[in-house]
Length: 137
Image (tube, rainbow, N blue to C red; front, side, top):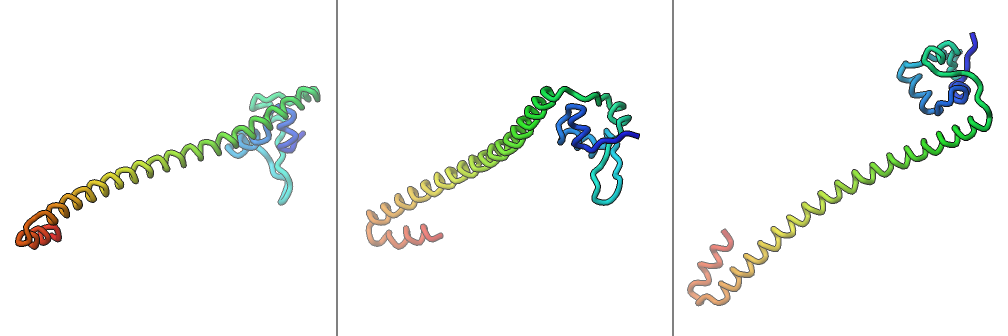
């Protein structure tokens, strides 16, 4: 029985290394483990039954495909990073909106207290105590 390492199988089939590993991890392609610490091996029949061609590809084509797959994997990692940044930005925007609301409420309270203070200042002295007691309640 002819078997290939995951890397060899990826090169033969034209799949990306991570894509092939994912298929093996999900159980779509069966791999055998020859022993502890040894790389998993995929039988040729398993690749063929999954509809993957195992004929050697010309070196130039496999190099281009490998480079494109490496670029795609890099871009996928960058995309994941950008999505995380976008999620963080959304959280920050919500926090800013909450802070704006709190600031508006604080400014309204300051305005109310200034108006009350002005009322106390301009009131005759016999009414001041009553006004001051109202503000502490």
